[in-house]
Image (cartoon, rainbow, N blue to C red; front, side, top):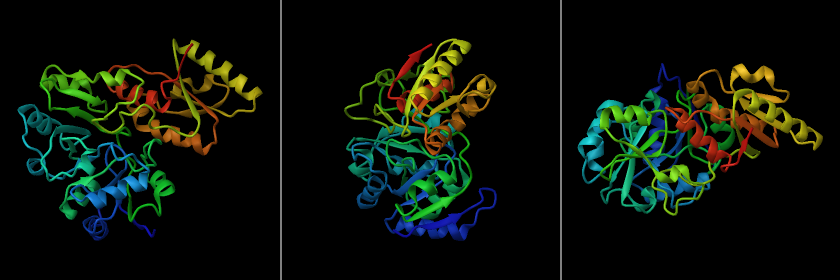
Length: 346
């Protein structure tokens, strides 16, 4: 498949290139584009045949729901049966931005897009390229992360070009993604708002606006959801080729444990990658891949680190663990999924 490549500067958007990519979307084909969270693989959300091409490009099971992207809050009323007050609050406070809301869908949304569910996940991205593309296409765009299903999500232009060139009809190579983790997914179809996937908009932030917000019980379990209501809820997800383990404990106990495991791996001729904070790097004896200094840095760099470990041809990856508070909840969610819940206690 020939892929139209457009390089676009987020601060100086080339509308001629946007128009070319928007026409591809209107014609029922697939286009990859940057958002503030991760790169998305988009197609016309209202066209079942177009949506099928997303699944084909990703190798994704068709029972996994897709997030529908819009460029104006008003567009949501065409897609859902009703917009409750708490949804209005979320849209007013956090849109455009990295949060997806789940509401009951209208029949205009095909089952192929909703993963066979009667609900639909919708968000309005803040990335200027994404917004310009959706506006120009003048259709809602279904777009999961632009990666092979189950692999780490792409946050840099190089990631999508290497993985997805010739698998889709168009690719927009733009800026690096700001947040680096997929959007928070909030189910607003029940009495209590429920986070199905944690992200950069945290439980604490949502509770300031909505009152009680709960985490879906499936977030604490290893088992696959029989019917996932949101992307990323399956057991193993975001996984590199190497085996990933999370090492938990006090700081220097974790460092000592990882160093001992690295020495054991060296004796077995296994290459070890160590995913860690910048201020811990100097204490490790093996190949380190640094995540930065703050939790925000970790969130932004996590998927890039996992992809880098694959490029380094690591056999085993050990990652430091993080707090479950604030954005740490989203970080640990992605780490646990990438590791298949394999934890080592230091």
